[in-house]
Length: 232
Image (tube, rainbow, N blue to C red; front, side, top):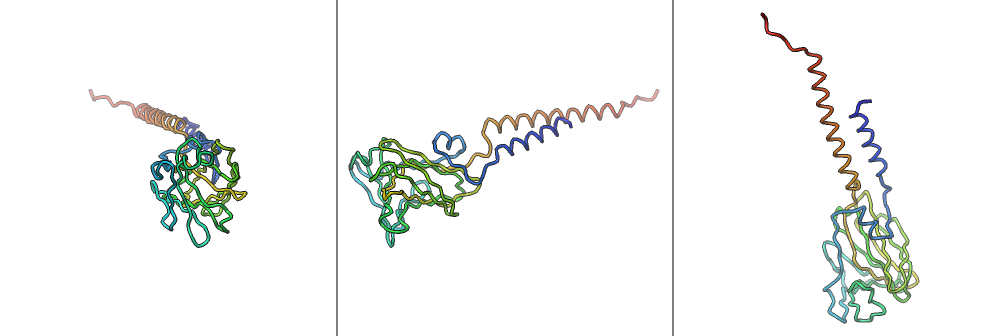
């Protein structure tokens, strides 16, 4: 097998090794960021005055950076951005304002619904809950896939993220145990097809071997076609 053929095989192997399942979950922001690029973060800062909460109580919800957040309850909407000074032991998680959604006891279907911009293949968020703290979350994609993630005791924030090989149009969050769900630092992005260092290495090797292949063909052609001499 020539070098170019060997390189093609190696490239196929690298691509196969990096192939992902439909959805890969991340319990740490560092892992999520290592698998994504072109990220945008919604921090909810500046939406509620100090010591106050601001409500988004209609079907329009809250839209920031192309992401729409809705607090859905039966026949109505209930969603707030809350400044931590309102009640520090509930909302003081160390990152400023947080998004507060409806608890399950508002009725069947109560949830935070997040609609993502077209083409989004990755999202991640800090998860918290109050009354009680450390509740689990059911996280459901528009396609029906369901995941469960645990939040943490106050004031620790948990993280949950998903990277996908296909666009994700929306996701919902429901806190268990009748808790009120809180989100912060909601991040969207694109799933990285290959780790950047591996992609650069493979691209460089293909370029070098391509050059060597062209040089080898030219040398063989010159050897097979002897130079003609001028007649005497």
